[in-house]
Image (cartoon, rainbow, N blue to C red):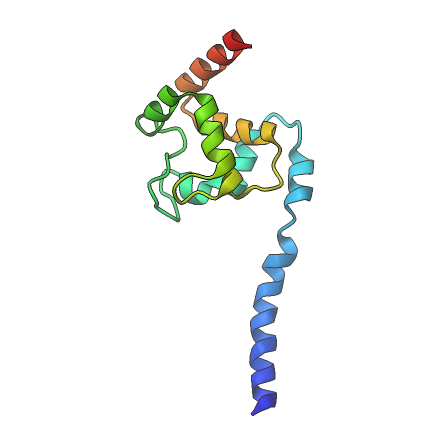
Length: 130
């Protein structure tokens, strides 16, 4: 009986190991640091499950590029959006689940998720307030 239980446990562990061994966020983030599509790659890796147009986890998170989803959030300001990302908001974990992301990388991810017209608006306001 114990021998059979041991095989079951080993079988379960063998299914867990490949996924765990492939998750190296520090290496991934280092490999994309400074790239032109850094924000996009962070979103695809850490955010898309909830923020995609058709999310795997539909919890009401604003969808990537959807102006109607992002307009009310833009009105609160980019600092508020960053604060929600950093601290977590509703079902979203702190730092959007990317605990290894720098503040700059989180901001790049936020900016990537905005519709292009709103992204430009945010960037212009950000330059004015600097």
